[in-house]
Length: 307
Image (cartoon, rainbow, N blue to C red; front, top):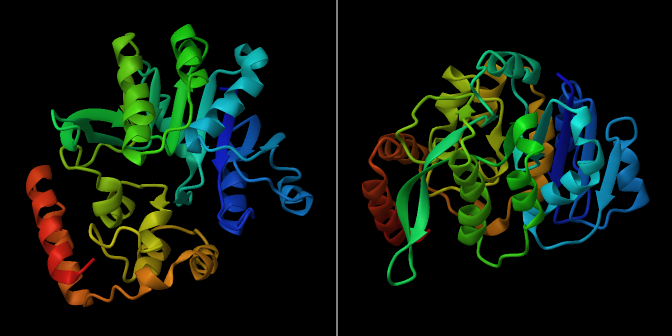
């Protein structure tokens, strides 16, 4: 397999963090060409960190988020798409990989029916109700932090038109609905078949956040979302002893994450100090509740705990 990868980057401090460099080096092990696209205007010193890793660098401010970076990388590769068998879209919203990407690709190659795949599939999404409010609905989709497309997909007109149509959207829910969910739904409508590397807990909502420990321990989940360890998901999960979870199951250098967290955890999030015993029991319990009941519990504890 000859692969091209487009990697989407953003950093609030306009730097390329060490955890990103680690990720890129691992990605380069399975990608013949790596296009790095940042929506930061990076200094030459920062871009030099990519020497010998990225084959092409695009660093320009845009407000189209990850799919805007995917679009720019795809457009750059357009004239040479037929040179590749697979196209990878990945972004810096995760720490990892904790497990070998090569082994994951070898496993997914066994599924000859699959046209596009990702690490995880989320069964639920959102739709707007009659009052223009977002409500939960069953909308299965491959999650866009790591996507892989076979040649019949990424050389198709429908895929090209979709990616090139990406534009700025103000609302995060709209971005997810239109681009992350929208891409999976469009490709399935066109007859393409999707798959996910991890198929554990598919009937539960957003297991990447709520069941991240179990996925690493039992499903060889290669990534942990940065937002979890940066304490952005404290109403869904807990982070205590995260170093132990990673170190016991992977050779990943946790010092890279620790260094990044010093810079990226806000003081406001640090102050949300809920007792560990409560979190360990409570979040393990609500993770397995039906989506609507889970949302109800979250709304209640947000009010009680002032989250």
